[in-house]
Image 1 (cartoon, protein in one colour):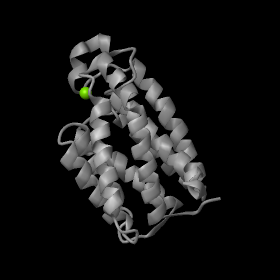
Image 2 (cartoon, helix red, strand yellow):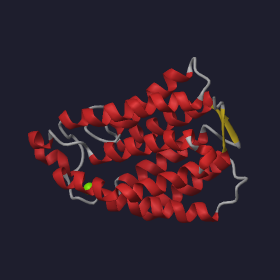
Image 3 (cartoon, rainbow, N blue to C red):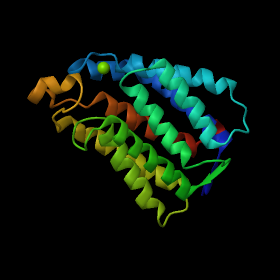
Length: 217
Ligand SMILES: [Mg+2]
């Protein structure tokens, strides 16, 4: 049972996400080659490499909102377009829910994910079903929030969120793209997982797995 997540643990989780993005970058680019310009893996790698470099410089007594602010601005400086502003907004909005905190409880972690997903929605101006990363973030964050109402274990709410993220990622395969380069393909955008949805599902799953293994990382 894990009822709280600390700022130091959050930094550890972010490092694990950086590592996993790097490991999967070729897969994300491969997905993007099917419907877009094939750069999603490279873009994510650039962004999360910048995050890793920033994490190396952070003192371990920073509050969640300060960590998020620092990491968001590094991501945005490295990736100015598309995913850059979306992840930067997600991190800033999520972090704002944990203002001045060095430890967050289960419902605060749920609020973090909810605010991050809403930030992506507002910044990206996408709707659900447009075949974007929002199609993973929104249902996953909603599941985390709903589960947190009568669940105190952070591992459990994240597990439900991760399972939902995987289902949601798969469901983008049958969606028609309405945003970005892939929208020009019309019907031909069907049959492929959205690359942004894939990397989003990975991030949520990695977050869950990292929390589960925290004592060993
Ligand atoms: Mg692309």
